[in-house]
Image (cartoon, rainbow, N blue to C red; front, side, top):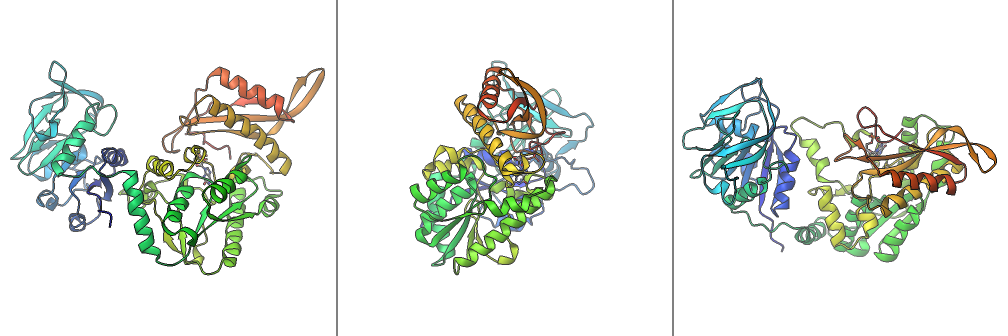
Length: 517
Ligand code: XMP
């Protein structure tokens, strides 16, 4: 048996940095989980956590219905670290003094350290005894509860951090998890030390545990996995394959709106290199037929989604009895459904073409449920997946159908594929692939006049879209170097027949979206 990793709970009060806290703790090699503040505290305390972090959040402790943790969290003998709102909640519930303020302190601040102790071990202030931190709060603790000492102050915040070493209760008003608090990681590492958490969580250890868990879960049954070519389903498939080998069958549906060479590369990687049992369904014809005459973007999504389900059901029926379905669900999807604020509007509100028929009643294996995207990539690397898959940019389920604006035809798809392949090649050659959230070509439904040699042309336009983003909720257009733009434009116009103009999209999200349809 592989030992279960030591873990830390982060109770989420709706803070914008909650996921970041979880990631930072994992970067320090300790497994962390986000728990909704609506979860009964008894359940949390029985969860076997080495320590508990109370996250930030938008509320004031004095607000009606403010989400306050049960006091039992401070009495269980488990170390607690309150961050921002978590500190105010700790201060308020334990009898300190918290003042409300309509003046928000937001941005960099300097903490003058006035105390020391386990939480600040190794933290090095500048020669004036100050520590640079990132603040974002309205209310402040003005007097710590009994038993606590104040560790520092800022001009706006009388108690910027406080500690009760005997009860192992700690709090910071600033955000140690953000990069703008340069020594934040030392503070978080100190907290983990105080918790006695073993720093043993790594993706290699994750793989060992996941393989055992998958084996125990599915027993001698067969498992089906739908491969999209994206990193999540690829890593899930290879992990399940490592656990149960031949008993995994993967299905890859070519919907006819994939990028250039994509289907061949998926088949090569998984069938030839990884020796997976791969069923390759070329359903392009069917998908393209269902898109004939369709120009409305939402209708395109619906048609592709419905067709996918039909194909999947038909093909799965041929494969005999397979009770399990492996899916590449990631931690952010899981947390979203438990979040204090309730599910927020994200990528998932899109009709997801990977969405599988609910009536098929598969039992689910979701081996990546605990991981963030960067962790999945690391697992992919450790499992030997090629960089092209591990670092693949997000690609929408409806594929190129929503990038050929207007009606989708084979001819227009071909034109877009060739143009897009040039974008991919040039972005890669410029070494920008990992920095950009997405970079792609869009085929516009207009023609413009041009001149080639002695001839006037009246041909198609490609729009180039390149964005930087953290999570696709917001995005900024990428400031691509002019040289790169020039090369892409030249090559597309010279190499792709039927295109005589390339434009660059300089809109951010919001108010624009990343995709054009
Ligand atoms: P937008 O265009 O809404 O896209 O800014 C945000 C992110 O979602 C992807 N996207 C989709 N993914 N099915 C998907 O699986 C879809 O219908 C879909 N539409 C957009 C888009 O590529 C971007 O990463």
